[in-house]
Amino acid sequence: MRSFQEMLREKVLVFDGATGTHLQGQNLTADDFGGEQLNGCNEILVIAKPSAVENVHRDYLDAGCDVIETNSFGSSSIVLAEYGLAERSYELSFAGARIAREIALAYSQPAHPRFVAGSMGPTTKLPSLGHITFRAMADAYAVQARGLVEGGADLLCIETCQDMLQAKAALFGVFSYFAEARRRVPVIVSVTVESMGTLLLGTEIGAALVTLEPYDIDVIGMNCATGPKEMSEHIRTLAGSCPKPLFIMPNAGIPENIGGHAHYHLTPQEFTFSLTHFVKDLGVQVVGGCCGTTPEHIRQLVASVGGLAPMQRTPEFTPAASSLYQYSGFQVDPPPVLVGERTNANGSKQFRDLLAREDWEGIVAMGKEAVKEGADMVDVCAAYVGRDERRDMREIITRFNTQVPLPIVIDSTEAPVIEEALQHCGGKAIINSINLEDGEERIKAILPLCKAYGAAVIALTIDEEGMAKTADRKVAIARRIHDIAVQRYGMKPHDLIFDMLTFTLGSGDEEFRRAGIETLEAIRRVKKELPGVKTLLGVSNISFGLAPAVRHVLNSVFLHYAIETGLDMAIVHAGKIMPLYKIDERGRELCRQLIFDERKFEEVPA
Image 1 (tube, rainbow, N blue to C red):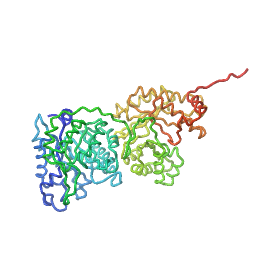
Image 2: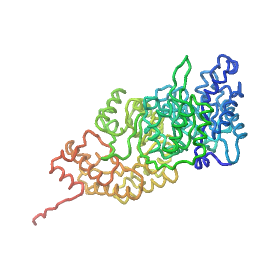
Image 3: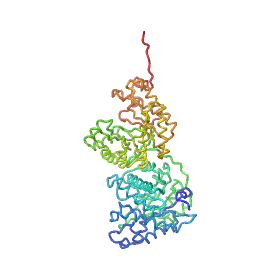
Image 4: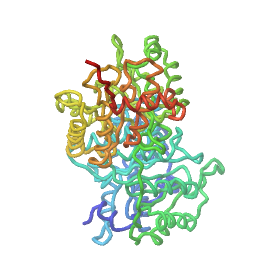
């Protein structure tokens, strides 16, 4: 019998409708749940009254749907703890999947297989707000995933995500289980966008997509919160940019409180009309119903789109990093992407002083200043001699996650520090950095973290022989890192950012006279020879050792030529970069001659 993924390629798939709405319609009593203390815990019904759950599945399968969801939306230990059932997460997840599997098999036919999706809700905790640790949430999802898959789920649906850090923890837990069990099922991740136009914590739909895209998930979508009308613009955004199949499961309209009960006003005809538009005009491949939908909603939906082949989309995904709120593309017009460098203990005395005083609010203020100065991302380095870098990074990132809207570049040489930061970062971060100085040791430590937490990475052109000074060596090292990262660790080329390194032109050292030329040539060649990758420079290195006023001018002129060559990103103090028209002609020309090593020699009389 064909798999879910095979069917996904062949036809539009229809999920079932609301489980809770159906259960409420059965007029269950406290005794059906096993007592007053468990009344309302739908998940216990798979043990206490399985016939009620079977009724839900049969009614939706009779309506013609392709996929039924398990009655396990809240079967994680986090939710079950509120009923004193935390230790029964595996048992209830397994039982919910087993019930659905048996019924799905009874309805399956070679021409129309039926599938079971293991429903995994958002829990009742928001890790971005400190309600629970990342690791505790991930562990709970791992147990729930194990119960669902071992109970017979064909796929897992992580749905109604409200906090992107919660979604990342769920994915970490699910993929940890897959690795341990050495088996995998398809994964859907679905966010819920509130009527105000963002996720509950303020995440824009584009930022949510950027955060999810690095993961090896199969389908991305939206469910719950609103009806299809309110989802329309967000679905258009996903249809135009999401490289994975789309999943849409709206409510039957925005709920209204009538007589103390939620009422959903969309009729099956109205609901089906909107979703048919999403399928036929926007290329949505998986549809279904969330809160308020009934078997009749699904019956009419199946009749309208159930036999259609998926419409071919040509999405244009923009490689980017994201914060909890917004995303910043790896390419901007005009370039470059500016990475603020001031929140770095190695480069800012102000930051070091604030760190020494543990003035966290002052550090947050520096992060916010980067926004005002025009930075697109912010580099954070907490490495300070005599201090606990891991603790300091946790304190900073926890605050930046919710208070600074820019994506974060995590700057550390220590893998435990990087992982600590990633566990508090709700968006897609960039890790700074990897290299080949000690062979592949650093790559082995960092790239698995990139995969597990959905991060991009900066790669320095350094190998066992040291920092590359010529264009040939810079390109050769970049190619070696690229091949290891893509072929061995499954990184996407667009998540590799190569720092081509440059050296000061202010030392007078003959060895570095061509530092600018070699760096510019390396940028040009890497962009041509390694399609999809991005390039970056710590621009201020070119002027190290010179007077501050001269540094500002040289940095600005060098950045201009690097951009012309193809530079995508620059780590700079954004407020100190000057437009060329503000630099006098003589100053620009002197800097140009220095960068391109246009020395003039005067003959000394004998």
